Amino acid sequence: MTTSHTPSLTLTVETERTAIVVRVAGDLDYESCDELVSTVDGQLAQWPRGGPALTALRLDFAGLGAVDSMGLSALLTIRRRTDAAAIDLRLDERPPALQRLLEITGSLEHLTAAFEDSHAGEQPGAG
Image 1 (cartoon, rainbow, N blue to C red):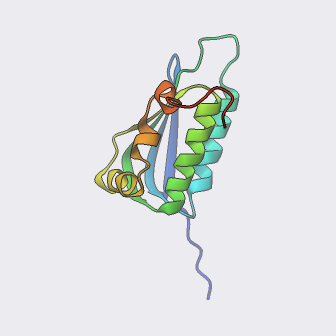
Image 2 (image 1 turned 135 degrees about the vertical axis):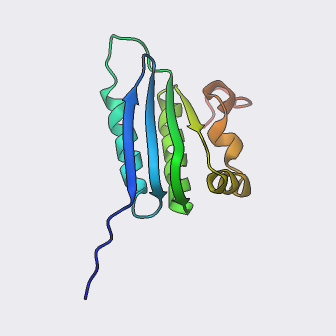
């Protein structure tokens, strides 16, 4: 007997004048992390050219359940995408489990630094 497991992640996207807000509800794990990255990629690609510049991607984790190492990997991938697009990544309403994971892995500062701060100390042309 085979049971199928429906990923328990719900993403709700809202756009503001200069920001995209993705509300994350449910578990961010091995089964669902690709959905978050794909949603963010799609939203970044769809931002209208010629209008107000996109300045921030806000991930709202008020409804987050569990998060695992693949969820963290997804956040690091999203950080690379926002850095490449020169926009801020904001991790809003972090529940204790996410906060603890970010602190334990040493990724809290990297993921929550403002875009300008994330490149402090880098040499031009390095990378």
